[in-house]
Image (cartoon, rainbow, N blue to C red; front, top):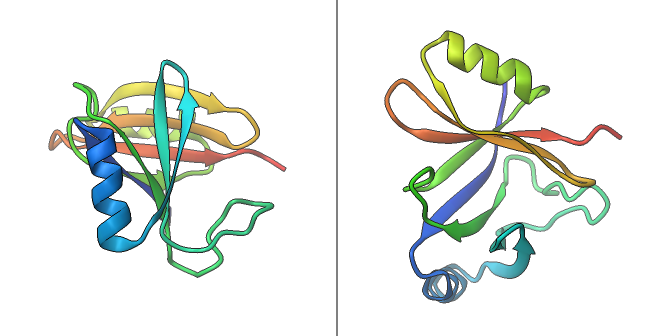
Length: 129
């Protein structure tokens, strides 16, 4: 059974969103350049600095990103063994690819898909050791 491993909260005003979530929940936020825009990592639970995986079973971390036409609302991300296989299954079951497999060096790869109900969700494949 594949697990939920990450969340992304979309925002029109990232500075306002960072202020809100950092203040209300005490989350650690770090903004990093990613491609043509910035991405804010959200730490809600401690991580293993080597693997970047949460140390508390069942806990997940996430991110804040600019709202877009492809990602108009928060995204729940599911960890899979292979994104390409998962996207093939998604399309076979009536879903569609929103954003194809994209590598993040030394970490893994992600993709976004739309389910038959219109929800945009994410996929994550960890880099092989």
